[in-house]
Length: 141
Image 1 (cartoon, rainbow, N blue to C red):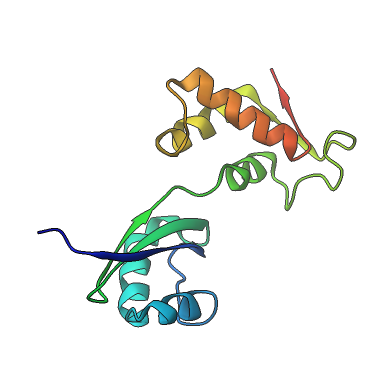
Image 2: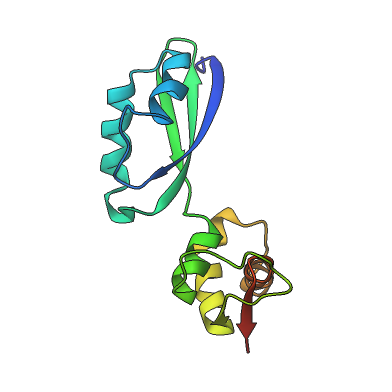
């Protein structure tokens, strides 16, 4: 018989740096999850993504046990990294903060493919290009 799900918790934590401090502690404490157990498991799984923001979906069961799914870092993080910027434009559409090449957008799309709602790489690349434009970052052919 499958376990009964009590709920889900969605967080974005820096890879390999989960600790009981906010936002992790309070979010998990409300659900009665062993916070240190989660932090150790999360940090072990995300050593390769050290310092990058990592979205995680935690499934909480009625018996206070949990499972979690790690997603790839947000596209905006990869785009900023490729453009070598701290943040996007303050006025996207008017002010261009930087630029990336179509090749870089394609590489980001390959990394994000499993999390994107796209059938092929071309569609995924268009999604990434749209994200870049909305951040005020130009995509050069």
